[in-house]
Each structure stands twice: as C-alpha cells, then as structure tokens.
Image 1 (cartoon, rainbow, N blue to C red):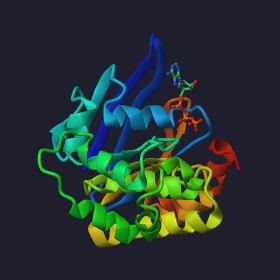
Image 2: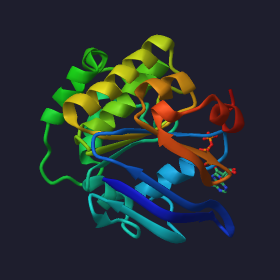
Image 3: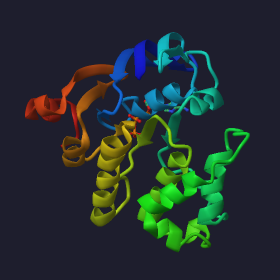
Length: 233
Ligand SMILES: Nc1ncnc2c1ncn2[C@@H]1O[C@H](COP(=O)(O)OP(=O)(O)OP(=O)(O)O)[C@@H](O)[C@H]1O
C-alpha cells in the first residue's frame, strides 16, 4: 500500500532523514518508534507531502506520490492526524468533522462519513454542538481522529495518538485502531512513544535514530535490547 524508498529530507541545508525505507502493507498496523527529535514527525510530514523529498520515492497504492502535493495524497486515500491534533477550537465538533470532508475539495459531500464517525466515537455525537476547545484532551484526540476518518481513508497516519490522554481514552483509541484494521481493512501507521501500547496494537515496527531506520520487524520480534538501546524506557 505505502512504500517509501531511500527517502532523504532536509530542513534547509541540514539533512534530517537519511535513506529511509519503509513499507505499510494493506490492513496492517505499523508503529514508528524512537526517542524525541529523531525524525518521526518529519517522516510523517514527508509522507503527507508537507515536506519535500530531496531524494528517494514515496508510492501509495502503486502511484508515485514523491512530488505530489498534500491534497492529492489526501484525495488518494491517506488520512492524517497531526501531533497536537490540529483541531479548530472555536468551531463546533460537527463543524470540525465537516472540515474533514471539505478540506480537500471533495465535490460531493458524503455525509455518511460523519455518521460512521459518530458510531466509532459516540461521545462526539453527544458533543456535536459544543465548541471543540471545550472538550477534554482525550475527546479532542478522538475528534482529530474522527476528522481524518470521515473520508474513510485507506491509510490512516497518526502522530502520537496517545499523547496527553488518560488511560481510559488510550484504551478506547487502542480498540478503535484494532477495529479499523479488522473490520475495515484500513492500514495504519502510527508514531507511538508508549511501548506497551505499540506492542499491543502493532503488527510491525520500525525504530528511528537520528533520521535513520535502525531496527524493524514484526512486533512479535521486538526485543528488550532494542527498547533499551533506542527508546526512552
Ligand atoms: N521546522 C524545523 N526546522 C528545522 N529543524 C527542525 C524543524 N522541525 C524539526 N526539526 C529538527 O529535525 C529533527 C527531527 O525532528 P522531528 O520533530 O521529526 O522528531 P520526532 O522524532 O518527531 O520528535 P518528537 O517525538 O519530539 O516529536 C530534530 O532535530 C528537530 O530539532
């Protein structure tokens, strides 16, 4: 589904990603891990086309996306939940979800996406008329995920979905990730700092260190040695 080959990305003249290669198969959950500042968010932004590649390739569903802008990537079926959520605090929950439908210029709105998200996160239906800024951190995270889900992406890219949420919401997000994969066949790529969460939801993992992939494999193969060497545990 998503394939990244030898991706190089800079901030100015400073190289931040070095020859990064990664695959996310249909219907799989892939966790990207690593300490703060190693380049995880940079990689997700490069997948979305927010940052340009200096070298290498990004293909999605067999199409070369390397030079395509973010809206084309989104229209092709990649949904993105940025770190810090990126919701609009002065709009209502419902209006935020509508923005998910409209942000990329879909000609015909498919409102069933919003009902589907209400089914996934019932709290968003209850809070539909409230301003998003009044929600708790966990509810805002659910809204941010919901806004990406209204277009029913084939690949959902999540940057630290458990950051700043309570354990009960973390559990709910874990269940949602599992059911999106199992029921909808959606592929999911997530950056995750909580090792236990990653071990539970992930099928495969990649670990980054200073802009390079230094370990990868099936989650069942993830070892304590890798955790000690590359993660803040
Ligand atoms: N806009 C920017 N301009 C210049 N350098 C940046 C910019 N954003 C990030 N960096 C640098 O690029 C490197 C990778 O940052 P990135 O945010 O991708 O790391 P990360 O692994 O996602 O970290 P975190 O877990 O803290 O979000 C860091 O050294 C960071 O200081």
